[in-house]
Every structure is written in C-alpha cells, then in structure tokens.
Image (cartoon, rainbow, N blue to C red; front, side, top):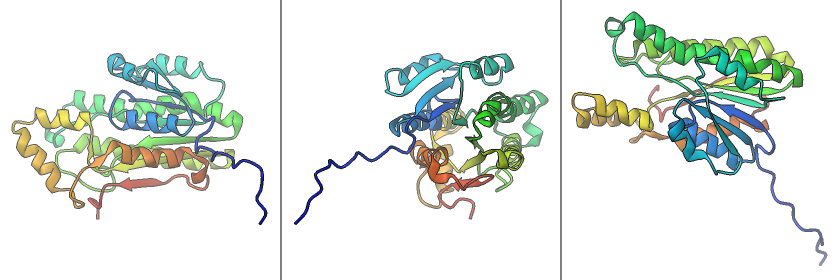
Length: 256
C-alpha cells in the first residue's frame, strides 16, 4: 500500500487575509460578526460609538477597535483614509423606534433615517472607491424583515428605513456589478441581543413584552446573533462570489 509522505495541509479559513471594517461592533450582531470574521482569518476593524463596550473586543486575535460615529461624515472619511484597501464593509448600526406614524415626531424620523440609512450612504461612499481600485469588494448591509418584506405593528419609521436599505443595496449592486463589487443585505426577524433586551425592559410590562416577542416566533425561539454572524461570514467570503443584490431573510419563518 502506498502512502503519500507529505503532511496534509491545514484547511484554509474562509476569510484568510481579508480586510473587513464594520460598525456597531460593541455588542449584538456586530460583535458576533466581528468575532466570526476574525476566527475565519480576517483582519477586522471593529467600530462603535460605545468605547467602553468596544474595549471588550481588545485582545481578540485579528480584531482592532476604533471609536467612530458612523453618522459623522468627517469621522467616516477619516476612517477610510486609514486603509489602502478594504475587502468587506459591514454596515450594522441601527436604531429601532417604537410606534406608528402618529407616534413618530420629525426628530424621531430624522434620527432613525440618519442612523439606519444615511450612515450606510456615508460608509459606502467613503470605502467604495478603494474597492473599485482593486476591482473587488463585498458590501453587506443590515436590513430587516420589518421593511418592504413585512408590515410590522409599531415599526413605522424603522420599517421605512430598512426598506430603504434594501433599495440602497440593490442600487449599489446594479451600479457596480461589472466593476467587481457585490452588495447584499441581511434581513433578520427577532434577534436576541442586548438592544432588544433593553427595548423589552423599557416597555410598561417587560414580562408581557417578552412573551409577545416569543409568541410571534414560528420556530419557537428568537434568533441568536451568532446565527446571523454565520450568514455574514458567507457573504464576506468568496463562497458567495456569484451573489449580489440579494436580500437574505433569516427569521425562523416569521415572514411566511
């Protein structure tokens, strides 16, 4: 019997050497994605406005942290100037306003649109030229099932903003397809994150609010941030090289 004497090579990680920048990385989906990216060999720059929580990522191999307000044009452009090239940007930052259109004041509308949509505009506009110079890049945007996919009670401006994210994603994908740029968005249902827990505690009856969230989960539980992060890794990797302009629903069947 003949055996090859060469030692079997270690399997290459999905994101070896890829340079990734993401927002809202201090907790929730952003944190889970930053860790998942780094675990797969990426060089990750994790940003957030919450410097104290962001420090919890310090020391994880492959991750460096930076406090950035991604709604601030000057800060976003300064961040982009720190990179010669970027392979992936993941726009995670978002805000969930509770209420119908009658509960939404102009300030609420403007704030939600600024965080949920304008921040993505700023990030993409700042980093896209670097991707175009390399004729390669993957842009991942965080949308939601509460958008053009499904009408959800008391999510007026949030759903409107997340529908805009889907439109932005498809527009960027169409405009730069031939230049090697991919742009996709992720549309979760209810994800168990510190942000969600905070919103539940802010309700008049937190216990009932939690029961209401669980009751609408057809699969019987909420999604975890780590489950969303697995999808992020796929969209950041070359395994999704033929995927662009897509909206990926991860909601346990809520939108069915």
